[in-house]
Image (cartoon, rainbow, N blue to C red; front, top):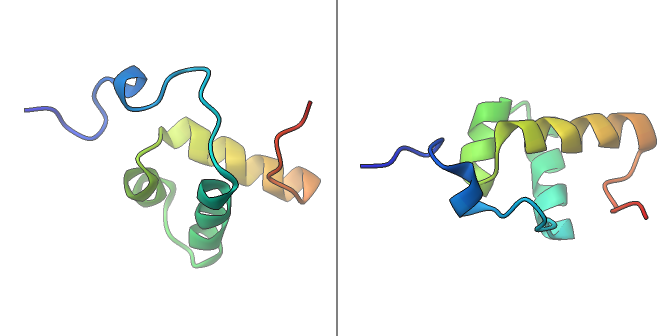
Length: 67
């Protein structure tokens, strides 16, 4: 039986971009004081990705993909 944190590459390829919806949902959960591990499980993405989305949003005020 696999847990939610096993084999991240199977869940999300390294070159796959997240949708704006997932970015927005992650930020919304953060604003509702959900912890990063819970957001990660909800969106089925790695914790490091959730952390990166939140950090980028705090620094730049956007979650849009930069060129």
